[in-house]
Image 1 (cartoon, rainbow, N blue to C red):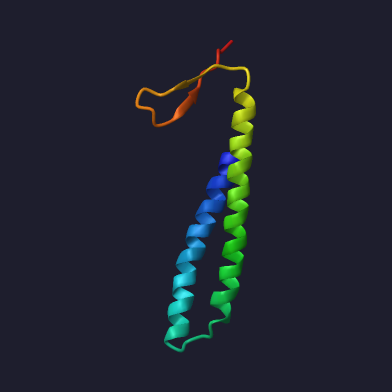
Image 2 (image 1 turned 60 degrees about the horizontal axis):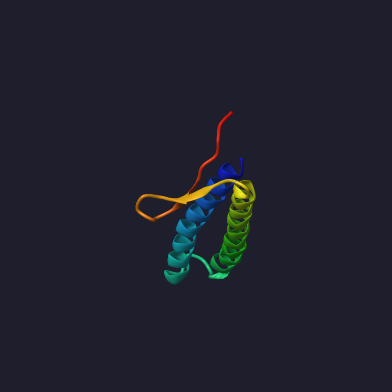
Length: 87
């Protein structure tokens, strides 16, 4: 479930960044003011901080699950993999 929240928030940020570029262009060419651009930037900053908190929560949960279980390095040393016995 937390993965779905993480993905949804990440896609929301990507869409917000595209809208941010559009609003900046509209303000540069005089079609609008910079106020919507600024307001969206503040909202995106809050969303990015929330995304960071969700990522930290995910890592914390994964570490908590790994306690007491053997952890081995992957073959190429790129990532760690938690091996758990399935019952």
